[in-house]
Amino acid sequence: MLITGEAGIGKSSLIAEFSRRLTAIGCVVATAVCASITQENAYQPWQQILFALPSIAAMDSLALHDPLLSDFLGLTLTADAATAGNSLQEQTATVHRIIDLLLAEARQRPLVLIFENIQWLDRASIDLIKTFYRFITDTPVLLLFVQRVGADGSEPLINSLAPFAHFHALELSPLSQHAIQRVIEEQLEGRPLPLL
Image 1 (cartoon, one colour):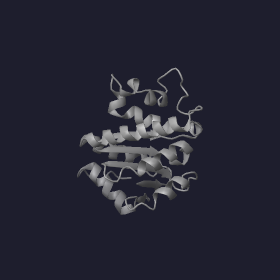
Image 2 (cartoon, helix red, strand yellow):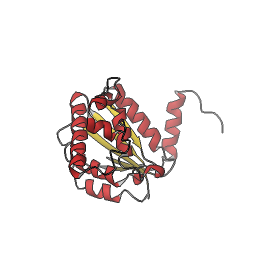
Image 3 (cartoon, rainbow, N blue to C red):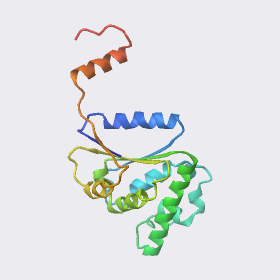
């Protein structure tokens, strides 16, 4: 799912509330916030996602005992092992190990992966998203992408996911005056409106 909206319209607030509610009903929610300064760091958003997973965050972390995940997350002496000179075979094995881990998490509890500011995703992360997307047809996984309207850079990802039947896009628009008044009244819980 893609959520877009103008700057300041409330995308982050919506995502925060959505995450809170999903966590309250037992979902695993992992968020990556992409930034222009990390766009050159391959897989940086995926590292954020994986560190947020219970199986990775646990004290006896699975990643510490798994060489592929340990290298990918920079937990070994070769901090750049996820991106520096790995053979195609090693990279493919790492991608499949990550996908296996995510699917295993989702079989335990529904999994929600949120990528904010997707216009700053790196090419390797986009490729991993596209690969993972093909595996989640029968698994309780929601991939949620968030970006500002008109932000360039996410077209390759969106164009590759849009043809899937379960992909949806939602553009947030400003509230009408009537809707704003309703929100204020609900927040005031019946108290009189202050004079402005």
